[in-house]
Length: 383
Image (cartoon, rainbow, N blue to C red; front, side, top):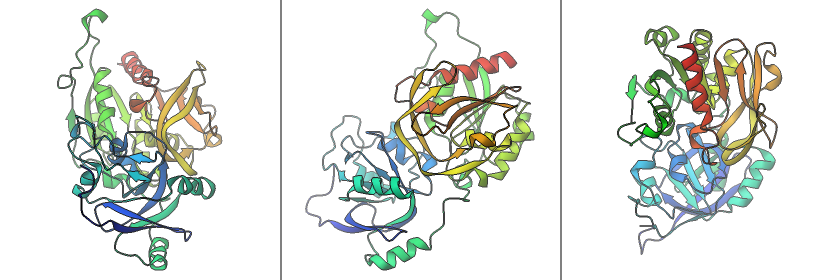
């Protein structure tokens, strides 16, 4: 289920805006694609990465050298289709070996018209990005002139200042409840089933697993587009509001910042990733672009109250500036142990808290589940 036997390799180029060019072998769809080149240090989970809407506008490098060995299946998608602009691996597995697999990674990218490149030195490329920062880049199987391709990359849009949320958010509100479909019935040994609450999720690029986690932790969910006004959200009479993950520069999503600002103090709020950054901006803080971002499943985060360390899954290129937050209103709750960037905060006077990482994805594997429990407890207290 890997490459079709007998077909000649397709030459491909990966070009960066700083003039760096690497030659490799194309896989997936043939063509040309542009985006911000970033790396993810996860050892597995490439399908979840491909389908995470937070990667809209980005070409992803997998640092694990061998990718594709367990194929792709319909159950593990975080969205209806991949959102990455392109995919870079050291070696695409020629063999797929997993009873759950529906197709190979190569076939999956072909199906969804995603351009990939293999056979490049991903270690060297990752170190280059760590030293010099994330770069605009292109993968092409059609433009094989290095100088022309670099010129095209330099003319492509910057990630900073771009609102990618409008491209990934849902078009219409919808309800989500998979508790019965996925067998999440409340165990009798735990006593009476807790009351179910109603949460409105503002979709900045939400993943299916987040919605499933909310279901599991006692919430009936309605998902609404990111441009939904605060008045409409409150008209649903939610017990709580969830601000989702998503792509791009949070400062560019001015309509969501305005909506969030109007919701603070009216309803309990829990934000993650982009939602965390949006809350920071709504509360008067500032955000800034990280040199190369945090993307992977091995980021250590300390809970400043319990002093416990969580191994977290992360995917973001921007962060909230700690010094910009109003200290009389905001309390820091979590910190990144690698670079001391802000990973969590809560409001001192309103039922509002957020984290920068993805608690639904925790590779711990359950290190961060308590955050959904905390949201439930906060909603229960204010219901």
